[in-house]
Length: 144
Length: 424
Ligand SMILES: Cc1cc2nc3c(=O)[nH]c(=O)nc-3n(C[C@H](O)[C@H](O)[C@H](O)COP(=O)(O)OP(=O)(O)OC[C@H]3O[C@@H](n4cnc5c(N)ncnc54)[C@H](O)[C@@H]3O)c2cc1C
Ligand code: SF4
Ligand code: SF4
Figure 1 (cartoon, protein in one colour):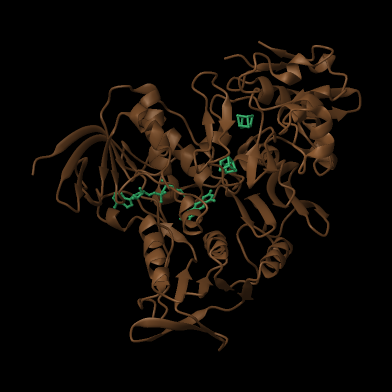
Figure 2 (cartoon, chains in turn brown, yellow):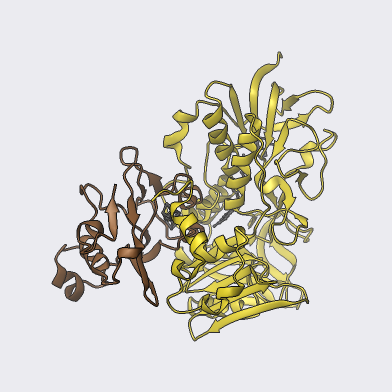
């Protein structure tokens, strides 16, 4: 499968990936509305971590033996047959947070929608290139 | 009746059995697998309380994946006896199976202490779909507006959560001086108790039910040791589970609290493995033998048993108690040694009005964690415990606001991000 490769040496910590991810996963898909008009505001599913001069953007690795999937008691966390991405079926999700407890990278968040659900990178379902990769000005993320 | 022959026999087909079957199939496409389950289908135990609380519409577990497993499921197939000299198992129905490799994964049974009146109508346990159906039926015909839950452990709390959804008045009775006594400390319990109180639930600690009183065979109330009386016609005993091993008496399998297994999940009888809530394994941190009855360990043990049954030789690093509970407005995560015995343990904590985090270190390694409400990094901490990563050099950063992968040693971080199983 194609995965997002992280090049921490190129990351400048600008957080454009976070902004684009948030907008992509908002209800309107529009930047101003997503930040100003939607309550609760959507969460970015990629996170820029920083320490001193070092920074990188981190999102789900869609692990082969994904512990989040193995430990999900509802089957909400599943692997897409076609893309091999690990995705959360929000209808099935009960917000038990077994997945959060299991992810070694800490990249799943609790999101309040009509109910509380697990929120994580979905490789921008259907997009050819995930928006974090597409909008990184310095090629610190690559999709290959 | 003549024997049915199979290469693999899975006795119990829930979490451990399911993941065992999957692991077998990864290595052996064709070997025959027979899976027995006492219940009617394959279900997810944690969904039982959610179903009772009308939060999910099915308790099925990954039924869509069953075809790929290509196994013969025997619903209602209750194992009765394992012969001492042969690899032969007999069911309650009289059917018998002869196997090459077997997995014992019969899970746990609820503990019901000998409280007078425990057999009257209205006193339940809640660990199986049948229990759940019985409670539903019972509530249809009762004014069941009030429930007493005995046990403030994690099944007790899950039960409380279900009844909260149903708008029933709940009293939770716990013998210890805190709730979730194995998962949190007194401070952790304090946040939980506050949240329960806000949700309108009554918590009584350091007390227990001394008698279930009844009228015409039906529960009328619970009398507590303290003399307090809780009227009501519904009670749930939820003080824990113990390994379901009685049926193995006389089988030559070594039994302690559970089925004693080695690091390959194999019992003392070669070719017979055990995994999940029925298995007694070594604790990852203390090295003591114990039964850790939680989902993630059932998956891990099941997978290792499956690999090894199909010819591999993988070892299980040891069991780690891990769990998470959300009730009312509070969410808790706990892992490892959270209330260590006296000794040179180091504690790192942060405390605020609505959150609490506690890390327990020993010799520079993380060995336990409690998180109240701020749980997003739970998996990172738990993995540091599992992988035995020395945290001494960055321990001052572990509880920082923006703690993340970036604070971990570069090799470990890169291993996780680019490691064998997790490609970038
Ligand atoms: C209400 C509830 C909520 C839970 N919530 C959580 C949670 O949030 N997080 C968590 O980590 N864990 C939770 N658990 C615990 C978790 O479900 C167990 O750790 C896990 O199910 C263990 O799996 P297992 O396969 O070992 O056994 P079980 O799931 O107990 O399955 C045992 C299987 O054996 C079968 N069986 C029993 N006796 C026989 C026999 N004689 N012959 C043939 N088959 C037999 C049963 O039919 C069943 O299929 C919860 C448990 C319950 C009951
Ligand atoms: S959420 Fe975490 S555990 Fe799950 S696939 Fe992604 S990186 Fe792996
Ligand atoms: S929070 Fe949702 S996706 Fe995560 S384990 Fe629970 S049900 Fe599965």
